[in-house]
Amino acid sequence: MSRVLLVCSVHRETGLATAAGLHWLLSRLRPDVLFLEHSSTDLSSFLDGSCGTLESAAVRRYRHLHAVELIPVDLPPPDAEFKQKVDYLFGRIEEASPRFCQLDLVNRQHTAEGGFAYLNSPTSALMQSEMQREMRATVEVIGEPAFAELYALWTRTNDQRELAMLSGVEAFARQASFKKGVLIVGAAHRQPLFEKSRLPRGDEPSPISWDSDWELEEPARDADTSPGGHTTDPSALG
Image (tube, rainbow, N blue to C red; front, side, top):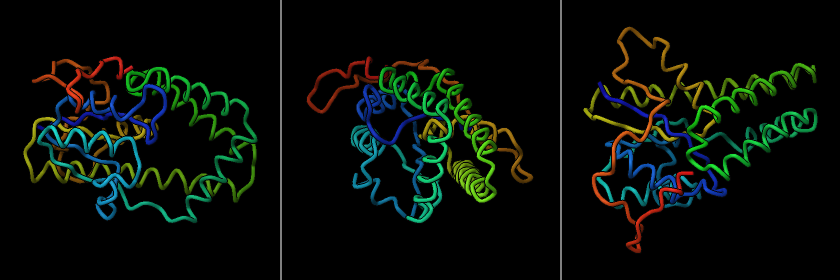
């Protein structure tokens, strides 16, 4: 059975959460396959770096140094109208809930100060769960049916994306043999993905052993160095 680690990230660099930090982490984990929170229809922007994400920069550097297969498993990106609706959703919640704003601020601070060590910690998972609870409570307090439906649309979209990611990883595992894979996702997807991974999907058992609580249990097989030849500082992990 193939093992797939859920590795949490952020899409834009902040503090210690950098492309260099993610590259160092991947160099320690040494996956055979990298599953991407990116769609196959838009893979070119990930490969050439034009999407501008932290993950793209880290994966392109890792791929340059190590043999690894890249498998996009996300749904196609939403259109501009949906993005505008999501911006409105979060804007209203921030206006209505000082507590959500405080949780979000603390999460951002911890991300900047702790980098990938924080993003992949139980503390981060608890923070994400608390932020989701506060969002739901705020939507109920606002009490507008149209706003509640917008929130439901956002949650349904996330559910569909997470199920697509799980199905994409498992479909690949059924037709290709590998020992260890990594699914790189935004930290908010960690717990929902793990919970969904434990639910039955179809008649066949999952070919994947999902791991959201991994540790750096093995050393790198060779020195992890920057392009300039300097040893990557493990503090980049946080």
